[in-house]
Length: 221
Image 1 (cartoon, rainbow, N blue to C red):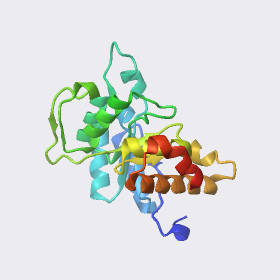
Image 2: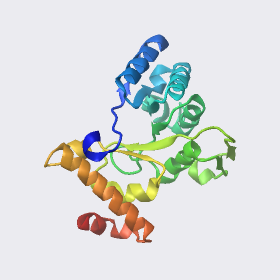
Image 3: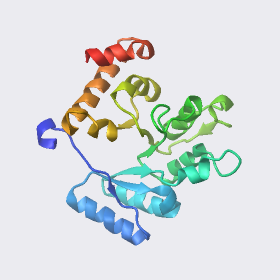
Image 4: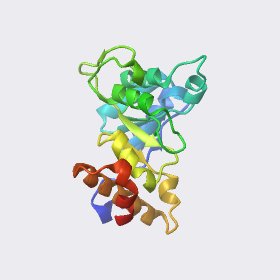
């Protein structure tokens, strides 16, 4: 794939393990293989382990993708636990390059304004208080690095106009079944996603209304 496209490709090798020592071993092995990115389940692995791995990745040129396995046990019930916005802020302080944040559309659909509220908390330097978006006080991150939101879970090419409009450029769109489920196979699935994304970005930059014209834009692409 790299030879055909001239672009860097990577697989999220999962470094999550039962001990910090084993996690670092896995990250070292990934680096030796020349892999550009590793993955960690930060809630099951724990914040101390996550920060240790984040430091290793930062020092050794690896991207760190953060998965949020177990989050629903903590944030799904409204009468106990923690909202994901709190877990997201904790992750930004712990370390990582991008994290699953919900999609607003697809199978991990969430409340749009609330989701965009904690997406801003992840990637912006300064966020004004706005209770309608779940931001209960003004947050100034000063020089704390941001984290890119990852839209993942049941999304496919027909969601692309909404995803482009909702998440903008500073985000990661992760299509699993939306790529592998293409009737012509994996490679056409990847091409379809790429063509749809580029068409939607171009249309947005031209000032077109993605919410109203999105399906037509995808069909023409």
